[in-house]
Every structure is written in structure tokens, then in C-alpha cells.
Image (cartoon, rainbow, N blue to C red; front, side, top):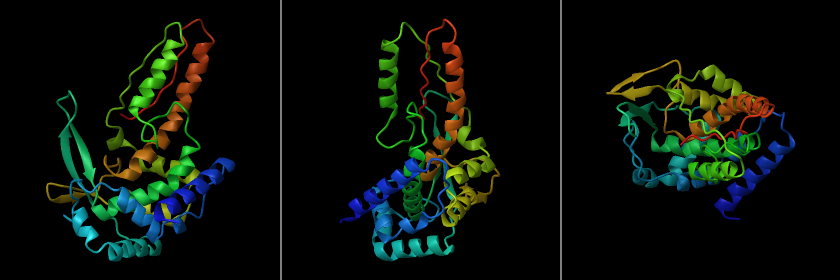
Length: 259
């Protein structure tokens, strides 16, 4: 069995268990993240991304790949792993004067974030509503638009409500994220590692600061986790949808996507 099959087989088994046990918070997940798992996470990590605070490129990391991955695995499982600060850069928002802050993890951190994402993703995938498309495997904003178009074509009219949550990443409360995580994942190694990422700090203009809320935009782990948190919001939208169906109004279709 090659490493790709090895990882996909384990992810499938995690998904099966998560679907079978919808109320369970999983306590034993970190053991899946071994050298083969990290190697696949490394293969899937972009090699041309901007550099983090350590200035190390993907090419430099690959120069001592096995040694670096072994150090990453050991630090992760032993608790000695120390999350480096995230480098912040700002880019223009499309069609707006505002700037969008992005967080740039180090290359090694990107690998570990992806590895952790892969081990928790199959669990949370079982809990999503079908109308959720943001940051999900084999789904995209284009797929959301196709589903929305198909739904509207089957209606005698309908509503399209476009919402943008202002500064969603910047203002989210860590306590809420921790609560969402522990409902389905309570593995001590995973929980502590994510806690380290939350408290790693942000480096901007050469200085590191430690905000008490918000998460960086750019890390692989945050997209899945924040999307999982939005499920609660989708639940309330679905309840509103059910209420609207009781009245002679066009039938709404709830669609969620982080574009």
C-alpha cells in the first residue's frame, strides 16, 4: 500500500466511525499522524506559497525532508512542538478599498496544519448540511451556484440573499471555537496543538502581538473549523426556512459558501 492509499484508507475509516457515532467526541486520533501521513500532507502543500516568519522555502525544507518530518512528528506527539507566529500581510479586497489580512504560516506549520485537518475533516464532514459548500472536499463556490440555479429553476420564483459577515475571521471568539472542537474531537494532542496555533501570535512589521480573538486567514486548519462553526448558523437559517414554508411565500433555498 502506497502512502496515498494509506492515508485515504484511514480517512475513510474515520468517516465511517464518525457517521456511525454522531454523538461521540473522538479521543484517539493523533496516532494516525505518522511519518507517512505527514509525507502525504507535505506532497499536498503548495510549494510556491509566500514564506513564513522563518523564511524557509519548500525547496529548503525538502532538502532534509525525512529529518524535518521526523522532527515534526516527534514534536507534535511529545508536546514539544512550538507553534511559530503567523506572518501577516494585507492584500486589497476585490472591488473594495479595504485590505484583507492574510496569515502566512511557516512551511513546516502548513504541513502539520494540513495533517491535523485531514484527521478531523472526515468527522466534521458527517455533520454538515448538504447546502454547505465552503472549504469542503470536492465542493466549490461554482458547485454552490449550480445547485442554487437548479433549485431556483424548480421554483415559481424565489429569494437569493447575499450575506457577508464583516471581519468574521478577525473577531471570532476562541472559546466558541474550542466548544465546537470538543463536541466531536477531544484527543488531547490534537486539542493542545490547535490551542498552540490560536496562541502563536501574529508578526506584523517585525513585531509579534498576541490578540485575544480571531484567527488568521490562510492556514489550512482554520477554514474547515470555521466552516464547522457556521453549521450552527445554518441550523437557524433552516429553522427560518421551515417557518417561511408555512406561509404563501416563494420557497427559500438555504445555501452557504465561503467564496
